[in-house]
Length: 620
Image (cartoon, rainbow, N blue to C red):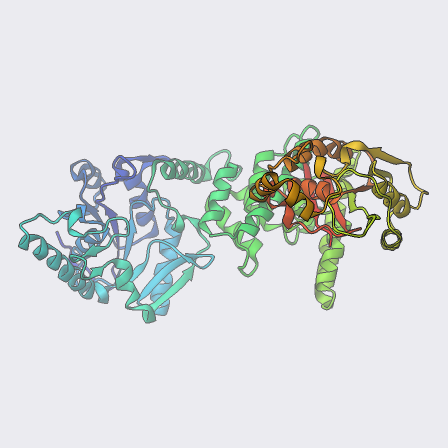
């Protein structure tokens, strides 16, 4: 059936013919929010005010047709629907009037596309006269493209030529055209016996000079549903969007999984995801401890807001863009908090009790990359980065003053600091005195420092002179105790000697040179070469044993009340500890440099809810 139209017509071609093989059931007939999928897509097109709608049916057409008839929507059957999506494009475009002004191609999979997207594209089309328009979100193209009617005939000819070639190839072999004849289904491409291919994408790529992108700041153009998991997720978003006029309009939140899904839609890089997860942990920690005193706080909404606060990073005024995207999904309260995370409005800042927007703003200012910092350290870092630009310096100072105001307010409610931080200076001892100066296996034997080592320890003492150590821990071997005494200047707290921090026990190899070991223990030496971490020294221990021995006392040190802690230990011990703190496989511990008197800085940050973040910087 072909309708006679005018040259102002813009039509939406809805592709609803597919097999839905990965979904396992017919997509158009699935319920989604308050409507069936096909009803939802049609309703969006109707609300957008398009001139005409054509639905292409195929798989289970007999079940879809009564719904379309009830809605008064034109439909066309695609007898070749099993050959893939492009055959449905051809069927739909073929049903259009030859003088159609333009047409959308909208797969039924993209069931959440909002009418505002279609209206925006139509307005740009009529204003710019560009032939092919793509909706984009943060620069990423989505559905549906709007294509000028003048491409209708060319598209049909290209598709039909390919399809005829494919059918002829099948007929020459006496076969039906089927999946085995080379048709591709996942990308909607028809392949002509492997000799050529046409898809909507490849067709449009031939006309890139006529294309233009229209930024709509709408995530629905990137959402589709291929699997039951996709469908379930889209159902959750549909429910939120349908509540836009309900009693809880705009108050919904996302699960962490769905918030991260939005980041994945926008192809957020790993570093941005890690930053967002850290901001979310801090924001949720603040909200958790404040909720008892401020019941209106929604911890999950704050967490999900923090996860997506930078999702439009790279866009001009990215906070505002992210707010618009969330508003378009019906997440208005989340959007308000996200939109304020760069520059919090004065009226929001003046609220007497911490709000969700305030907590997100503060959490963002407490995080650099994926590290939690104090406001003082974060301010210093930002000023160092922007110190050459007076305007940027003023902006940093303004933002940090606002963060300090919020932090003071939170601390007044809690009656304690928002963060508790300690710094552990993990030091390798200075050079010990080796009798003949030769290279030897040195484990738990106990030489003192060499004269050179004493000098190294004094040099380190000068480097850390400004640090007041609240606690000092050391291996009980004298090369460590002597280093600790010099570095702490014997004026601080008593040195707590811990035998558990001794170097690895190398048993019968103690004091031997490598050549002696190779000569006297050839089989053991060969095994060690094959497994440096798992090898157990004769009558000694392995590096796995060492790590198991040193982690418990180090955890006790991290749990202590001291703020600045000096720990002096050995190369093997430090490497085992750092590998654990950095999340490295123990097999990689030998890649960690540990020169004499190097300082590894370990920051332990306790969040308000008791969760802990540990950061380690390897010394040189």
